[in-house]
Length: 74
Image (cartoon, rainbow, N blue to C red; front, side, top):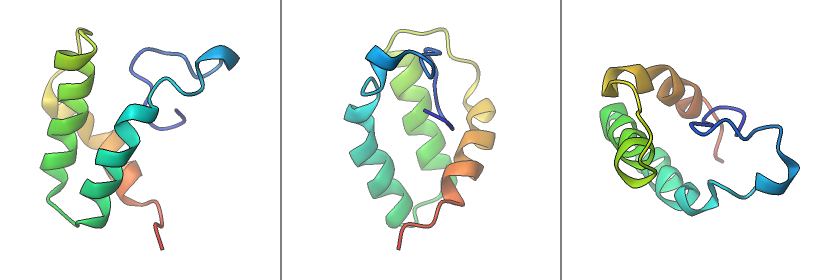
């Protein structure tokens, strides 16, 4: 929620598990060292298509992807 919070629930204590269903795929994309564009596409799909939010353009996901890509996973 500190990096990706498309709904804006970061400070809602009752919604801390809101994005848990997406963590597995994000982790797979990060450890699989796939192109960052794939992670950006997934986050866009999650926000725009799955959650039904008026997500911005796919290119706007790149700052989030950069931050997530810098997380140490080992």
